[in-house]
Image (cartoon, rainbow, N blue to C red; front, side, top):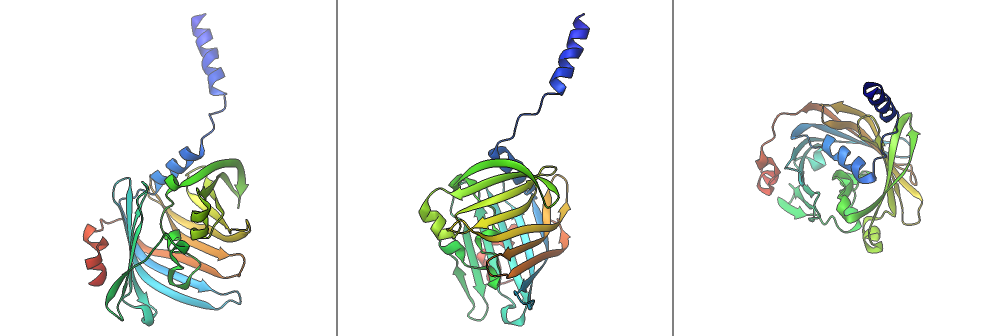
Length: 258
């Protein structure tokens, strides 16, 4: 009798729905997929105007995860000739510290610090990506809310709404709120929608392809479309390697002497 009761109990438990995940848990699961120790590759960016004109940018890209609280990125530009030798260094943090960004301008042989905390830090090389879009969101400075799940672009998705805690921060960054769509199967962000200060859809971020390094996921094709202007930016990463990237790459000295 005890064996029968135990079997009935296990069957009952197995058909109960799993507890709903919170927005915090979804974000945490996504963060773990991005903690790849090192990655590098060639970086190609196409700037596509509303009428179809295309401008291309090429660079070498390096990334290194420095523990759970810091991620470093370096871009060295090779094309077009007008920006060859330009370097961009980013130190981003997930614990509330201020992010750091520097750009090296070979024409004047100087390094300039970029203020990320005002106006989103400006637009990255004339694209639809702001400098802030290139770093991972620090959700410690944002309010978040899980919305009902949806199938979006044919993908079963968790949806999380996020917004800066103060009006001043929202005005500085230029967004009222974001909607982020996470694939249920691998917790990768496959779409993000940016809404302007009037609550109108401004931009859409979309992942077209990615590499699965198990347990890490890395997007290798990303588009950012400005819905209001019709301009689009397409970013592709090729020749990807997970070979260890030296820490010295992520210093201002290396930035100036690459």
